[in-house]
Amino acid sequence: MTQAKNKVVVFLGPPGAGKGTQAERLAAEQGLTKISTGDILRDHVKRGTELGQQVRPILDAGKLVPDDILIALIRDKLASMDDVRVIFDGFPRTLPQAEGLDMLLEELGAPVNAVPLLEVPDEVLIARIVERGRQAAARGEAVRSDDTDEVARHRQSVYREQTQPLIDYYAARGHLYRVDGVGGMDEVYSRITDGMK
Ligand code: ADP
Figure (cartoon, protein in one colour):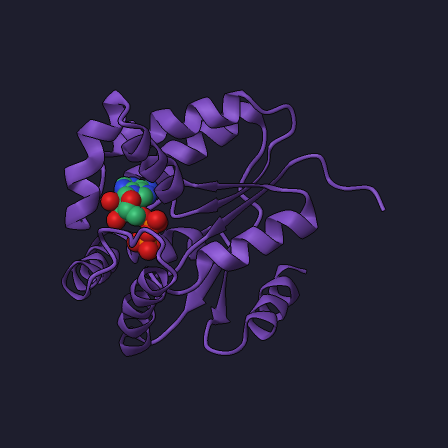
């Protein structure tokens, strides 16, 4: 089977919905590069780069890093690729980011193909995030500084205010489809791939 040259998937859903895990698998099975802006930013913080020092307090507070910083990061990532086969996890998160991404993709001739929206009820989300923190601690791993009850709740409100408008943005372009994010990992994965056909 020949693969389409370019493919762009934008994964939408609230913090704690399981986007990272599902995006990882989709990337592996479909030969896509996963671009997780949260991972990229946390890596900068860990390495203590100039950008890392700048964004650290923002991440710790569960606020959003400025749009121009994100768009510049994504521009660099895309510029280093031959074929544009990507899955975005955690980007775009605001309307200006979505518009910025569309402009970059237009220059590359690789428009967005699919936007799965992973839906999970609010009360399940906070429980999952706090549990993720507890399990990491129990394994002796570093706990994400923003995986506490209070900051997790703030991240949910940021999602509702800043990121939810993207649902309409992508629905209007015909790319959005809704996926029930409650269930086993394989079950949810099948729903994501079924919706993509
Ligand atoms: P989650 O989806 O669980 O909140 P992420 O790893 O996607 O976790 O993001 C963690 C943090 O990184 C966010 O709370 C925010 O501070 C920053 N961040 C990640 N992606 C973006 C983005 N596209 N725009 C602005 N800030 C971002």
